[in-house]
Every structure is written in structure tokens, then in C-alpha cells.
Length: 437
Image (cartoon, rainbow, N blue to C red; front, side):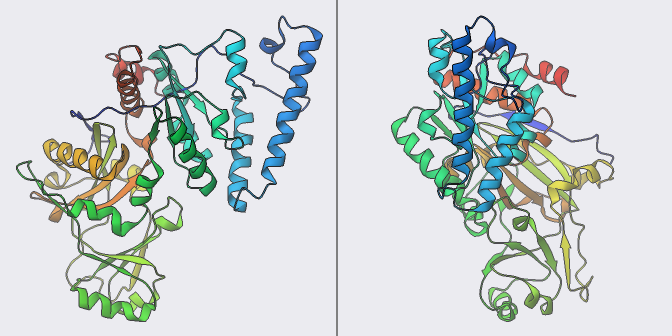
């Protein structure tokens, strides 16, 4: 069967409302600075010479404070310093410097409207590029959702106000700042709480919640593959595997799933000898034949969207027994390959929507997360036995068809839950198609 680009199924199931917020449209932004710190014409227009000098001087002071911050010991690692500097450079390139103090807007009579839902976002430069796309911002703005970039160089308390905070930063200083902000602003929605995200950073604990589920009468059975965690001396791994009753081949996955390239470096171990070559700590997971098809289920609040991905081919019982170890890339990166591949019709059939709705809803509640995805396979490529093999927090949503619509609806529902009268979103799908490049 030839797949038509991405096979997509979207569902809106009843469930709890959550919230988020974005940049106020029409507010004069501090942007377009060159090396001489020239002000935008919009900033200078109508100002006296004294006001112009004070604005210029204020910007010089702000730049010095940011450079000083980069040299402080509060940033625990060199990588975090580099990431912060990359964010600063990226902001300059995009011309998106946000006002340093909301009081500037208030004094100018530009107070945020009660019809605007403001989402502050704290994401890495790479995640920001892939997620906060211009067409997404445009669609969200039309429905009263405004995004504001949170500056990690300043205390969170000095920024805002926010209706919600969208974040995926693991730095200890950020998490402490966020926790303090959450205590002083309990009405602000955190997407998602760091303690809940931490639960899915461990491949042992992330799947435990799935194993605890008892889904019945939903069109399919859901479980996890047999797996063990191995640490210590790699020469003992073969004994541990035998004692646990696991069958080769085994998928070797790093125990920590923190989004780094290393956490996605996986291998398929075909025999016991090659197990001693692995670098612990690891999760060793039984490989389940699944027809070469992986289903990635993206959860966004109460909605879920599923797409097919090309996956590893089935393994014969005696096949490749002498192959040793085979590294393989991230399955999520194989989307382009999937578009060119013919699948066996039964293997390519999407999982039952009723099952996906139940699974998504119960895991949202158990994990305390609203933005995550599930990697699911079907045993043998046919039948009703499914396995969840991985869970990822805030994955690459930019790869999901019409993710702009999915998230705009999500933020609108959050705004409604907080009493914000943002614009109805019934035409969201049409607009997303029109703005997608």
C-alpha cells in the first residue's frame, strides 16, 4: 500500500482544560538594533532628544547586564552559557527583542487586553526555531494568543505577566526560578511541571505507568515489551538477560532520555557476546516484530494526532545471529523514508481511535503531562496487541501536519478555562492550510 504523505488521524476527546499565552500584537518591541544601537524609527518617533538619549543609554545598560550575567557562576555549565548566548544571537537575527519591563507598556497605555492570552515560552534555540514558526504565530495571534520569549538572563519574576508558561529547559537554576514563580503566581499554567517531565526522562519509569493500565473494550490491548535496566560491569549483562528471561535480539537504549543526541543513540544486539560492548546504564528491551511500521501518537491537551513512520524491519528467529550489534538512527528521523515506502496493508492500518483516546487520556492523568508523544508498535504488524516502546516530552511537533491548528485550539481552550474571551477557532484548519509554506 502506498502511503499518501503522512497518514493523519486527529481526535478531540473530552477531558480537563489547561492553559498557555503569547506576545501581545501591536506592542512596540525593542528590535532591529545594530552595532551602533540605533533605535527603530517607531521607537524614536515623537520623542525629544532627552528621551532618545535615555532609551539609548538604557539599552546599553541592558546589554552590559546580559554580558555580565553570562560570566556569573549562577550558570552551572559551559554548555548552558553557550545556549544562553545562542538565544541572544538568535533574538538579534530575528529582530524579536521583547520589552524588558511590562511597566514600559503600561506607562505607554498599552496594557495587555483581557482578550489576549499570553504564553511565555522558555525553549532552546533549536526548539524555538522548529516550533515558534511565523505561520503558527500568525494563526495564534488571529485567535487572541500571543507568544512572549522568556529571557533566561533575567529573573522570571521580573517578566510577564503570563497566562501560561511553555517550557522545556532542564537547567537547575531555571527550574528553581520557575518553582518560585509558580508559588507566587499559582494561577499561571505551567506547561509542563518539571517534576512531571522528570518522570519521563528515565526509560524505566516512563513505561511503568503504561504497564499499570488496564484498558478494556477499546479495540486493542496495550502493554510494554519485556525489559530490564543494566548497570555496572557489561560482562555481566548476558547473565542478567538470561535471568530475566529476555529473548534476543534486544534493543539497547540509554537509560536517560534527556533529548540529547546521546540519549537517542540506540542499537540492536543480536547475540550475547556483543552485550559486553554496551555502555551502561541502559535499558535492554525485547525486540518485537511489528511489520516495519511505527505509530507516533502526539498528545496536545485533550487531542491526539497519529502518524506512521518507517521502522526497523522484522527479524527472523535465526537471522543475523552472527551480526553482533547494529546501531540505528532515531526512528522519528525516518519520516521521509516512510513516504517512499510500500507497507503491507494490514501493518499500515492505524490503531483504533477509541484505544488511542483512552490511552492518551489515562496517561495524561497518570503522568501529569499535557504535551508528549507515544511510540507505539503492533505485534507482528497485525492483530490487536500493541506495545508502547517510548514516551517523549514535548517532541518535534513541527513535523506533525497542521500542528499550528492543533496547538491554537489547545491554547484557545486554555484561555477559555481562564475566562479569556479569545476568538472562536472554528476556521482554524482552513487558515493553517492557507498559511503553511
